[in-house]
Length: 545
Image 1: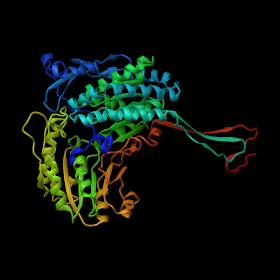
Image 2: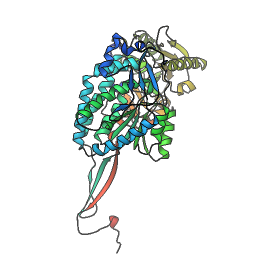
Image 3: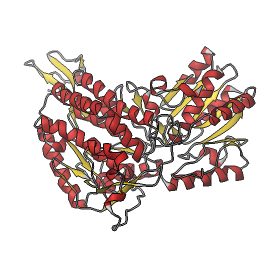
Image 4: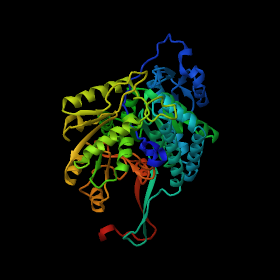
C-alpha cells in the first residue's frame, strides 16, 4: 500500500531539506590512502566520470576552477566507503571569487530579463540530460533513495521552467497618482550578489530554487554547499559552467566556493553579499541572521520544522496511513518537512497505531542506489548517535517504542525508523526537533486542543489535518488555525509544489523560496514619481509658496 507511492503522487517538494550548519563534520581521508580505494576509480561507479568527477576535484569555480584550501573526502553513508576528494577554498580564494562575481554582475545586469530566462532554460535542459546520473550521485553521497534523488534534480529543472516564464512577467504596477500630470510606478531591480548556503539533505534542489529565480531577477550567485556533499556541488556547477561558457557569459555568474565554517562566516559578514540565503538548523540560522543584521544586510532563512499531522475521527484512514508513513520515513526522516508529531483523535488512536506499525514493516531498507529500496541510511555517524540518544531520552520521559528504534547491524548509517507512543504533548523530547526518523504519536480529544498543540512548538514550517469536515478545514486555514507557512489538508506535511512559496514562520526563519511572489526577495523595490507636466503640485494638497 505504501507502497506504491511515488514522487508524482505526493509532489516533489516532499523531499525537503535540512542543513547542518556553517560547519559540517567531515571525515578526512588518510593522506596515504591509495587512489584505487576511492569509489570514483572502481568499475561500478565509473558513471561518476560522466559528471566530470575524478580522484581530486577543484572546489572553487569563478570562471576557472581552483582551490587552495584543505582537501576533504566525502563518504558514502550506505557503506562508509570514500568516494572522491575535493580541494576546498581558502579565504584568499573566497576574496578572489567575490570580486569576480561582482565583475560578472556588471555584465549580467545588462542582459534583458527574458534573455536571462533563456539562459536559465538552457540550464534546465542541461540538467535534464544528466538527471539520472546526477540523481545517482545524490544517492551515493547524501544517502536518499534514487526516486527521491532524481526527483530532487527534477525539481531544479521544474524551477528553471518556472523561472523562464517569470522572466517575462516580473515587475511592479503603475499606480494612480493624485497629482495631475504625474505618473507613479513601482520599479524592481536586482540586488546584485546572492550568497547561497545549502544543506546536505537537499544538495541540488535548495540551490536550484535560489539560483534559477535569482538569475532571472538579474543577480549573480555565490554557492557554498554542505561539505559532506561537495561532489554534488561540483557536479552541478560543472553543468552550469558549460551553459554559461557556451553563451560566452562570465562563469562567475554561478560561482562555487566549497568550504567550512570560515567560508560561511565570511559570507555572513561580507557587505558585498546583498542577500544571504541560508538553509540549516535553527541555532546556526540565528547566528547567521545576527551577523547579517549587524551589517544591515538581507537574509533568507529556511530552518527547522517540528511538523505535525492531526487526524480527526472522520478521517479517511486509507489516506492517513500512507501519508503518515511517507512523511515520517521518507529520506530517513531527514527533511525539514518530515512529520515528527502525529496527533490522533482518541477514538481512532489504537487502530491507526496498529495499522501504521504494520506499514512500517513493509518499508524496504537497503542500498539507496537499488531501485527497490524505500529507505536508505542516515547521512552521518553523528546522526545515528543522535537517533539513539533521542530514542533513549523518549523512553526516560515515559514513551513506549512500539516500532523500531534500533541501529541495524549492517555497514552504513542504518537505523530502524521509530514510532513512540505514550508521551505528553509538552514533553521536552516532543517539543524538540530531532532530525531523524522518530515519530511521536499522541492522543487528543478536541479540535481546539489539537490546533493548540500544533502551534505550541517554536518552529512553524509545515502542518496537516485529515478530516472531511468542511467547517473544520476552514477553521484550520484561518486566523485561529495553523500558524505554519505550509498548511495542508488530507495530504502529508511534505509534498508542496514549486508554484507556491515555500517556507515557514517563527523559528523556521520566515524566508520564502520558489514560487508565488518569492522572487521579490531577490530584488529591490523603488517607488518612482515622474512629473511630465509644467506644474509642481505637492502631495496631500500642501501649499508651499
